[in-house]
Length: 162
Ligand code: GDP
Ligand code: MG
Image 1: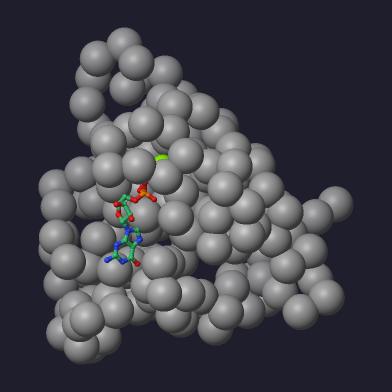
Image 2 (image 1 turned 30 degrees about the vertical axis):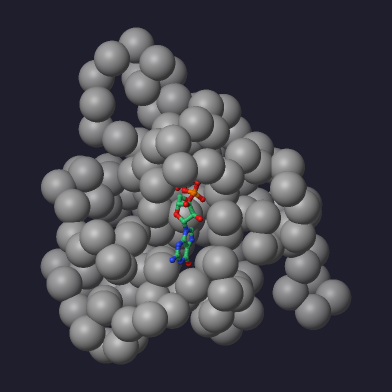
């Protein structure tokens, strides 16, 4: 069995962009419209010779309407089947209430968790990630999915834990 890595986070943090970066395909929809990726997307990633499955989720928005509830259910399924879960947050936007809600749920999942602060390409890594320590899932990894920065080091650590 391939290790399964799930990408989780509120809409617009860059899950689909990271998915594309890891799988080097355009199969996940990347858009400026929050919540557009409505379902789980599977892709094959590789770190060196080692393959893994990466799952892009529609996100956990903390909203309660019917479509969001459906999306959330998909995300929960993705978490259940994952060996490791990456919680993405937006370093430019800073800590959001939805990040805290998702972190609380993830901590209960018992999965290997990685906190990933995305969109850090123009930011000082230490400063950009400082607030996110409060989420209680370890030291944040600073990456830029659009610039592919920090992604290989992150995935090496993830695969070692998965
Ligand atoms: P998702 O809703 O979590 O899947 O987020 P998307 O992958 O659709 O990205 C939402 C927006 O953030 C898009 O406009 C992306 O181009 C942008 N984005 C994603 N990653 C980065 C990054 O590393 N840096 C910057 N500046 N923007 C990013
Ligand atoms: Mg998406």
